Image (cartoon, rainbow, N blue to C red; front, side, top):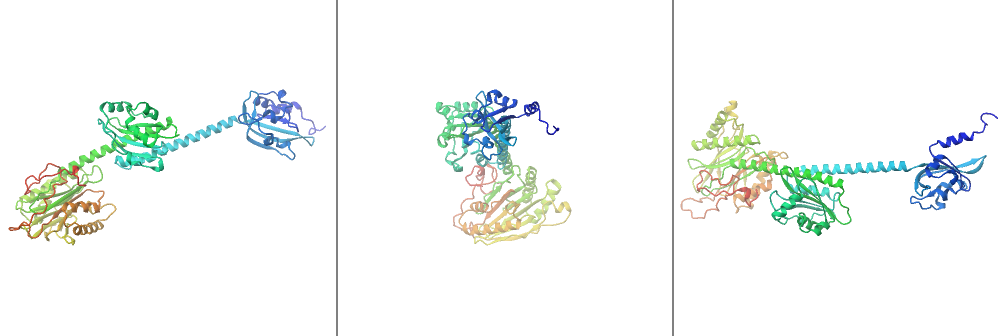
Length: 617
């Protein structure tokens, strides 16, 4: 017998099947087990002797729960059927001797001996380890996806918190990000430190993206004892879990009062209340609730809400600091502005709008005062810069101009030359633009404007009939330019008649120029709206005119100063005139309260605080 024809040693075959690393079963044509290798014995917890002769399907094949699989649905028996071929699969289970099932990945192939069909071979592996690895991988992937979702949520929240310096606007951007992902509803309550009063400034519900504005209202006032109980419950920065059962069982619980309405109106099984605070200040709470069958918040969700609460607390503190800085800046600016004098039948109005940036208090100013010869002087100006230094320089230039105009009864051109020299040699103020004008005429008219312009936008004269024209005469260099550069430039005097019932507008460039609009377009817009309002508001005050003009133009970005002069009717106030005077000049002023206008013909005229006035600025 040659080497190729020599029979294989049965011991060799047993050694191969013993160490193959997989369970191997041989089955005869009737489906009975004829052989099981040691690995199959190990996986099934059965010896070969106890399995031999048993039907492989009836003995081993089961569902996951151990129940039998109908024989006609057994795909592993396919090789035994007529014309059957090998199969493989992974969604099957074998029954162990101890009654448990083992998931298997398997393959079957027909077994032929001496060219005759002798049964089949089943090779199988324990699939539980691979399945556990897949489950761990799936759980890991799910955890990564959840972490990614939460990181995206936190990023979106951070963007919403940085998008505005208004607490209400911030909250209305924030709450839709939390609903429905983190809860079925969310509410933000602000409760000032040391106060028993609070306000619910925003609520959002998952019901069709509903914003239940009827719940945005002042909160019921808390007694001192209740307020302290709430502060104790929310001390620190850890969220507090609350259930509907707890609110029902203890109606006087510290958080029951603010939450009961939310639970009753929006439904609630549980909620997480997150304190909003920094180390120095408590701002309020963020409540996120779940209703209906929704489960209570998991620990991971509470941690995310806690992080959002810390971010919101810092954002609210930034809002507080922004408005405090803005108030300081506005207060300083208003201290530098002067109340308007009340001169006979002339009527004046002034408006000042601060820059949108918190600390940009700027160098814009207006001024109106009586000169030593009884003439009314008008000024509008702008010192270069947008900071406290610019405001200080503005005060220097304004006071120099006042002193020079009072002390020297000279034409505006001469006053400008003196001012240019004084600013150059006695001050470190940078260049400034301004209009200096004298309103000349006897009581009853006619009136004339005598002015110069130092690099400033031209005054606008609007007649009672709505005709408009810019007063472009009297134009000269900026203050601080001619003397510094030894240019020898001058400011020519200009004159213009002021018709009865006309309105003269002096303004700074913030009214007509912005990043998105050129000054030419801004001047055209000013002229257009002023003409319309002169016709439509002929019977209304100059204050009403200014307010409507600012509302229509809606200046943005830079600070704005506006000074308007309304001329009386012809002959009004002249000797023998019996017509009643026009309504008194409004005491509304952008200047700080409790200040009198120097040189006013009305002693210590009333000046109202514009920050507390009903009139919108």
